[in-house]
Image 1 (tube, helix red, strand yellow):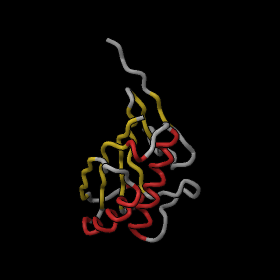
Image 2 (cartoon, one colour):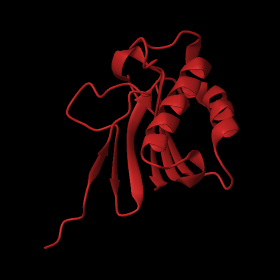
Image 3 (cartoon, helix red, strand yellow):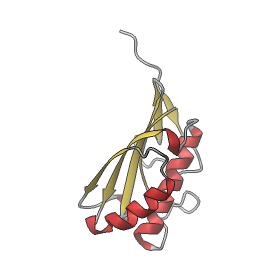
Image 4 (cartoon, one colour):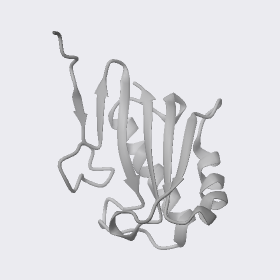
Length: 129
């Protein structure tokens, strides 16, 4: 059986993985991005300013990973948003809506009990490469 070629994506412009995972994997014309939280890649700390500021940093991190893989937000086909507090939905949705292309990708949003490093929001994405 032929296995597809997997390419790990790693950029210093997004937070380095803190475990046994890649920032993204490119395979068969798609880029599967790991979830990003609002970590500033320069400081390694969650950005200040609440959920909107974290959402902006999350999207900046995703953009950096996608760019490293030769992709963009316009090529995203599916995202999943994880929120610690579902009441943050409107704030995150406003930031998200500023950055996504047309048509916007398919999306799921779920509330979770907690996220790594005390983050308030995490977003993962699948895009065409």
